[in-house]
Structures are given as structure tokens and as C-alpha cells.
Image 1 (spheres, rainbow, N blue to C red):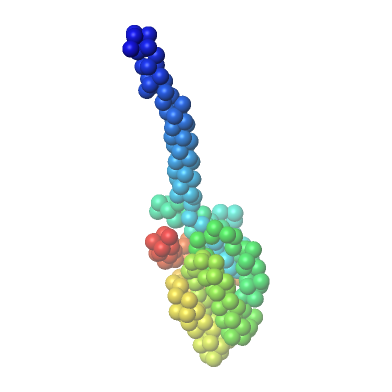
Image 2: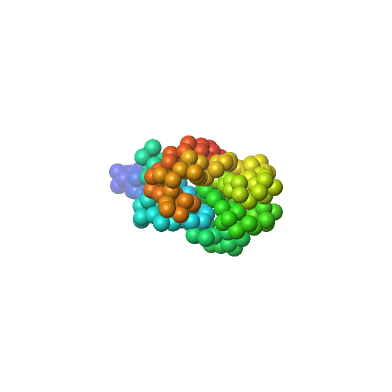
Length: 237
């Protein structure tokens, strides 16, 4: 084979020249895969960066009746949790005057998708109006069932009946919350007004609702239970 023919042969089988298009295609595929990988990582990182979402669902005790813009339970609970290093948001879904019947009717749209924990606090207005404990129990049961179906965790905040309603009513009402907590396997904070009820210095003039100092005490006492509930949800996810 002559020199020219030899060079032609080498040019024909020259690896860089012959494999060039394949290498370019491979590089393009590799680059596309890398971009896709970065996108997935970014989405995962973004999801992890989202705060833990809590909804406080209840009546005027949750809504912050008679208090300033930053003095309500949900606002102060959010601040307390963040001060302890929790990346959370606590939405206020309290409605003054709400009964368990009213809460059941608005539950679906008051608790948005993406909520991870609901602090369920209702029943006080039922008790003040003398509503049968059987009705209150039925409504709270239905709410817990709905939240369970949506895979939303619940911390059930209990209420206690006033003694002047009679021993039978008091017994029937007070039994609602531990019974439902056991039935649905949810944690129970026995008395939402613990440390505030019967303390005039921590109440508004109506003797029913907490003032700003009363809210501070309520948040301080329920905080460990909320932290435990958060930990359980994160541990199960």
C-alpha cells in the first residue's frame, strides 16, 4: 500500500473523526441527565425547606377574642415554636362563637391540603349552650374521622364542663375528649384552658377568655405536647 493509500486508510478509520458524532450525542445526553438531576435535587431541597404546617381549629379561644393582632394563641404558639428551632407556620382557623356543629360544617375548607397537624379545640360553646354531650361527641368524632381520612395528624385539645351544669352533664361532657382520643389514637391535651380557668388575672373582664398573659401561660403549658406531635408526624413521614 502506498503512502497516500495508507493515509487514506488511516483517515477512514481515524477514531476521533469516525466517533465524533457519537461522542457529541453522548455528551448531550449526559448534559440533559445532569440538568434533570439538578432539577430533582432542587425540587427535593425545596420540599424539605417548606415549613411544618399547623392549623389551630377552634372557637374564640383559638381565634384570639378580645386580643391584639399578635396576642392570640396561634401567633404566640408559632413564635414559641420558632424560638425553639422549629420551622413552622401556625394558621388561625378559629371562629368566635363556633360550636362543634359549626366546626364540622366548615372543616373541609378551613383546613387546607398540605396541613400536617391540626390542633382541634371545640366544645366550649356547646357546653355553655347546654348542647347534649352526645351531639358534641358525634360532631367531634366526625371531624376526627375526616382528618384521619386526609392523613392529617391531630392534637385534641380538651374542654371541661362548668360545675353549675350539674354532675350528670359534667360527667358526660368531660368524658368526650379522652374517649375520642383513645378511639382515634391521637394525643390529648386534657384542658385547653389549663392554668387560666379560674384565674382572674389571666382572663378578660368576661371571666371566660384569656388575656395576653393568659395566652402566654396556655402556650407555655401546651408547647411540649405540640413538639411531641410534630416529632411523631416527622418520624412517620
